[in-house]
Image (cartoon, rainbow, N blue to C red; front, side):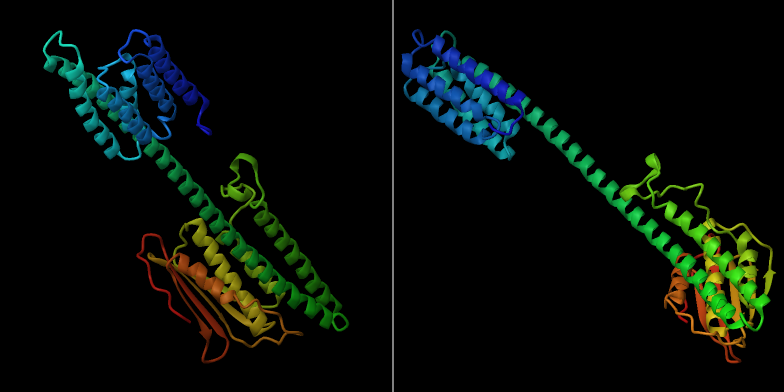
Length: 398
């Protein structure tokens, strides 16, 4: 009885006490006297465990009822305990088979009770009455059991759905964190590459050409300032913004302070790399189209990564051709450097994930990426990103 709801325990105690009182009240007048009363009190005590051990309680009550039949006391008032035990085993039994077996035993008991009932009327009428009462109790218990199991299944389904929602939330958080980590890599890697190149150039030109050194230092400051601003926006989405915060404190909803880079900012990107020392010539072919924000960001990052690689490997004063082409089916990006720039003062460290990051971004939109050295020198990057209405294409290994 421990660990059960207090309301259920109180109800079972009340039922048991009621059966015991009925048995004690009829101790003097009923057949069997105090011996029959002890049987009734034992049935009442067994009913205390009818919820936790319904099958065992039914066996005990049936055995006591058999003692009553053997003693030929006939049906007594406290035999209502038999009906209560039958109801309990059908409703609370782990298997319905126990309830069916208890119903079969109760049917035999009906016949025995009818045979021992004083024959005021024909015995089969009495047996029919007992059968109707017993059958009604069994059917009511079966209906309650069905509804109980249905409610339990609904609760289990709700719990399962809740776990699935939590799993989906965690997956969304992981995906958002991955995207933010990729953006932070782009911001830090590209900006730091430009800053290192310019800082080395400023150090090299400080005595020879102070004006050019000051220009290089200004580029370092501007690049660092812009990188810091982008990092603030990205880190901002990792902070819980109240009701809009997702699991683990991650804000997965759109944040007005966290803007995505668009192709309208591509000229500024080219200008910054031009200030860093690349000789950039850009062209746009075809009619520009409105692209999804994610696709625009992919195009922007591909150009940024390609220019960063050109600055690190082709060197300062390298010539770079940037071509952005629009067709009815796709947007095409081509970045070609001639590899004829001046070597850097000191080698720029490489994260080793530039091409992998580009390939990952392009694969998300089912595009193709080809990158490699040119026969005449330099490096070429070709990217084709199908528009949303175009079927997926295969990624080509470089």
